[in-house]
Length: 213
Image (cartoon, one colour):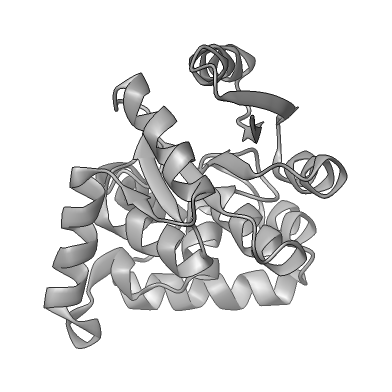
């Protein structure tokens, strides 16, 4: 049996994913997590074969951060990103963070099962849209980045938290950095995106599907 960890902050989503995975007859969910810290702790404790992680986790440690930290603690364990987002920026960031697979929640249940199997066997799995998004970035090249593509992973994370209404102090505590560092990230984001304030940041994040209403 393939041992799977599920990390998603919505209990009803985890229940649905567990049902899909265990009905395959080839996998079992050995642990569930509702936030990033819990995901890391339970992964280290239960040592699953594959971790399935949602990008939109609660403040403090989103899915991209979880992937990065899991790759540090357990380098050889594959991580599958499961998300509502199929935008290019998220696919690229997930792969950069170390994810070996990317599946959207709109995908058929069979794709989730196939993805877990593929990662368990040592391969990668990207949905058709995710593959197209990654290919577009490769063709476009690094020199032609614009908008949110020009942001670093940490800048994108800070942008998301600011757009959700969290204060600089709350963001600093979440990522274990100083308030001054958050201020620096905010200034860089505003400059790169040619925006003036947090209201415009929020509008940009909504328009570019960085956050969901």
